[in-house]
Every structure is written in C-alpha cells, then in structure tokens.
Length: 231
Image (cartoon, rainbow, N blue to C red; front, top):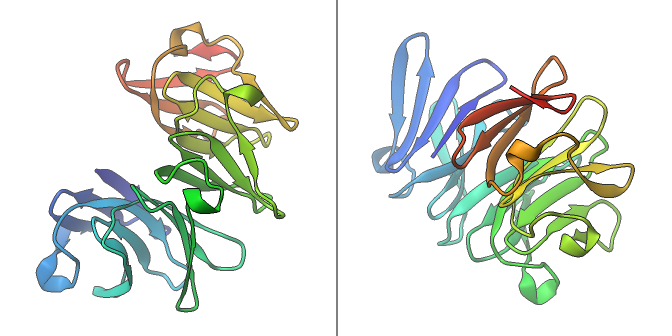
C-alpha cells in the first residue's frame, strides 16, 4: 500500500499484512506478533523521536528501535499522516474524519464539525506550517481558525483531492480525480500546459530536486512535468 524512505535512508513498506523494514540488505517484519494490529499498513511518516508513525487498519501506531507502540487504536483505517509545527500528528481516516494526536490527547474533526467529508485520503504540511487535508468532497487548509475550504467553486477540477505536495517556488500542487491543479497566489488554478493530464486521476505527487513534478497517474503511470511539458 505504501513505500517510505525515512530520514536515515531506511526503506519501509506497508503491506496488506503488516510492515516491512529494509536496511543494509536485511529485512525486518512487524506484524501481530510484534504488536501491530492485524491487517494492512496504509501510511508512514518520520516521528520527531527518530522512529516512524504507522497508519494501520485499526489506528495509529509508532515504531522506534524495533519496538511497536500503540498511540490511538480507533478501530478505523488511518490512510494519511502529517506533523504540524507544534509536534502534533494529524491523521486522516476512511470514515472518521481528521484526527490529531498530541501529548496523549486525541482531537477529532469530522463532518459534524464542518469537515466536507469524513474520508481524508491526503495530508500535507507546507513550509509555512499550514496543514492541507484532501477529502472526497473538498480541500481544507488549516492555518488560523476558522479553516478554509476549497472546492470546484474555487477552481478545483474535482472535489476528490487525492495527493498534495509543495514546489520549490511555494506553489501547492493538488492531485484530484480529474487531473492536476495548483494553489498559487491564494488562488486555485489549472496547471498550464497539461492537456495530457486533464480528466485522469492523480494518485501521488512529489517535487523533484530540479523543480519538476512527479505524478503517479491512475492509467498513464508515472509522469514528469516541468514548465508546462510532460515527459
């Protein structure tokens, strides 16, 4: 479900039956016997203490020095993760909205509290400290309260926001079920020069060191976009 390279260069893989750690050609498996719940691992993120946060089929866990620790077993799949600038861990769920864990406390924001949808499939913290949440029904930006919601009425080509990343120039790139947008100068715009991306779901995004954008597409596969040109 996910492959992640941590700050030390170690490779982690979330599978349908747990977590795998790969380092120096050695493999370590974390499953039920090591303290993870049964089922899949969907999301991974570096933790401030040197370990990794793990989004599982049943909630939020952490792995550090080979030991598994339960943080919040909510009985719901955790499918996206992000840290805020205060050290809180945000996690998006399949059906229980957006949750934040910090210092042993859990806060929940769901559709009953104004979230556009309870499925939060993508999370991203930008360089300014804003946390962006992509749901099935709109994009949400958390900075100062109240939070800001952006949807097709604000320029998105689709309300299902699947992937997020930030470019070197500060633009936030938004992958939706119908192509690519960018948040530039406070406005959601179409990405210039991308007719080959229009109408296709964008599943993952990352910024390249050369200023280009890498995108994992539903049908096309992996593409590289720079200055309006798809390669």
